[in-house]
Image (cartoon, rainbow, N blue to C red; front, side):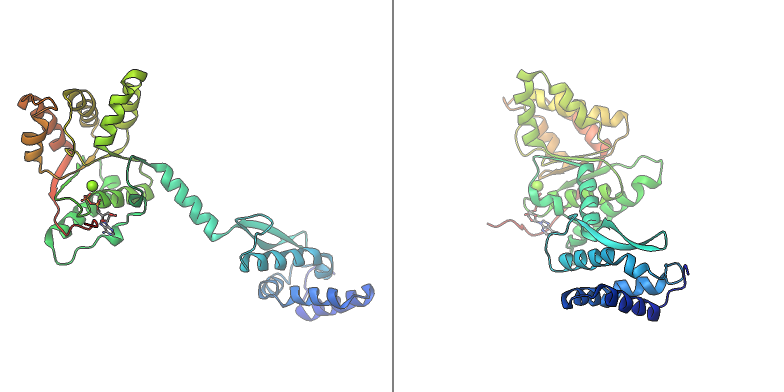
Length: 315
Ligand code: ADP
Ligand code: MG
């Protein structure tokens, strides 16, 4: 008879089989062990209509494989296919084992995909794990406002065809500006958005060092086209006119023309950045008009947001 096996006939066929095989004690134990497994039992129960009446006997080695692999995973041992777990499946009225990725494997794949969407250049490691859930606000209204702005951006970025500027986060050292940018980047990447985040002063140094290799333009190109760009710590080091106009200026010009939101973090307000930082190059020349041009682009691309809070860095 095909189909219609019940647990009684299952155990009956087991008995018959063991009798026939003159099974050893050890063998008997293994069989019982397989049939004691709750997953095996519920599989048999759920599929009793479809199973061959000799299914257990014929599929015993598969059942055994199933419980053995399962217990390896449970005990933290290496399973035969690492990262995968066994699953019982029907195969032509018999029982087979197939393997599917474990929850951990699925999660780590997701994590990898996510990390592929975020390019972090010269950023501290802890930023990778920054999360908007961990953004602390206490009763401090500027932090609450900043978080609201961040959440609004994330929410509206895909929804509207309207232009949405990024954020220009400014405030003192150590209060979590970079962390918040990282948290926004991670959230956007979760939503499938490509994000590039870079520590601007280090990037400027790298660009200077690339001059000899003739690949400055390629590197700038790759950066400027990212859907979302985050320039961290702008204004932390004095810039040469070349970095300001030919690197920063070129990136911002492209982004403005193509309506690509851009985030910044800085210890300076926009006004201070313009007057005290961008106007004076690293040779001390005063170039207010050049500074103004850059600032116009920054103002277009982002919205100024004051952030306050305690310095979290170890003193
Ligand atoms: P800033 O960029 O304003 O100078 P950071 O973002 O570098 O400050 O933050 C300083 C330190 O505090 C970092 O080590 C960062 O990981 C940590 N930090 C900042 N905000 C949080 C937060 N909400 N939760 C946990 N750690 C945080
Ligand atoms: Mg920072």
